[in-house]
Length: 611
Image 1 (tube, rainbow, N blue to C red):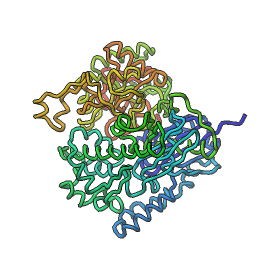
Image 2: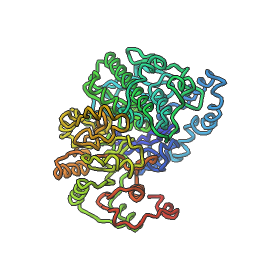
Image 3: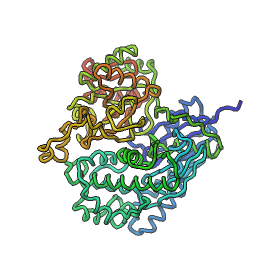
Image 4: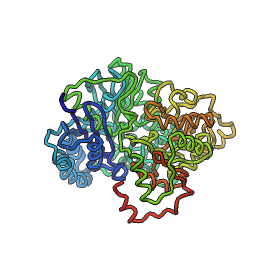
């Protein structure tokens, strides 16, 4: 019997670097570098994520059969040089900023990887960017065959692509190319409305329901020439990303009536209307592209990846109004997922290994692919910190947490292996009672330190989802937005409709679960299955038993500007810095009222920096 084949996939140097380890086609570990370095969106080579993946697999770099990188740097560099030459001399400043980094790091990827893995002596293989996205979506999917659609900012030249997967075969058939990009169009409005590109797009999506689509016609008239098949051209007269240092330019400002919003300044109705408008444009393009893919392929199932696939509002419309019967969306749909995609490509395409599809179940293991910590490790950490804690058996712990949730307490929930991807899925989560009308404001302001307009997502028992939401399928990765059931909605009164607008509508309860119902009566739903996440499922079931509500608020365990917590130290620090009432680390429970006053010193940081 031959030894197992281990393949390491790597993505790096743009945003959200990551590593993934695959053993004989099975995903063993995957992690974004930001979770380990604590640098939000860390683009550097994922040295710590690689180290974690190898340790989780119980191997050394010498035992790797193959190492793959998720795109082709030389082709990407060619595109960058051609772009600079095409707009010269306008792009000279940008080239001066980017050129040295390319010459030092990005262009010589073999050297970077071998420096990080000195024991590895095999080949280093490269996939194209959108091939990696496509593979990350199709190969782990529950479909024997499916159409594939990828959409993002830009890879080498492609900005979107579609293809077909059958068994272990994957083929991309068509692509859209730079500089016409749905991801960059959305990012341009992210920049113009005062949010950070490559991380603030989800804020624009959350802001959209507060606005009116008053700029849609203007966008289609001046910015986007959209065709029936979803392909389009962007009018570069209004953008500056080809050769400038910003996403938009003066003509864009003139078109929309002023300079970009200053970050952190007050939001106005204009930003809300812009967010609503670009969101509707994005959804229309997604729908047209999906319909075109369906016409070309005739497939019943669709797999999605790329950064645009994280637009869960658009995904929800694809499910409800699109031509496909079923969707699978890669939970790490952005660049981090490319590490997984290239590893799967090596296994199935390069090594020609067959693909095994589990009936009705994807192979992402609930996305619980990151670091986990034993109770022994947790107790050792708590003892060293001098924290006051209680060890509880499983059932008493679940009952206690459920009772505290019902009593209005906010819980930091740290359980099992960390999630891979941008969503907290009940492993590194902050939990609350969705029935509490004050919970959204309290969690935004006192816990997350973030904008008050941002909605929270519900986690619901899989078999009870239809009791609360217009959703007739699983949504395990919180990547589908669905309407709250009509009978649970609370319509606005005529007086409210006339007197309230914008953010003022936030304080009007929209359903009997006000803390998770957005102002358009929607929710970003996570369905929870016991076979995938037994502790989290049983906690929600215990809450249901106590309250008659099979839903809890689930938001990521972090504060604004920081990555989701990874280690017990990260969770404890977040707990002590915020107004979280109770922290649960595995089988250990900590109450804020029992802790000594928080003092974070440099010595404390150094002592626990390896946790």
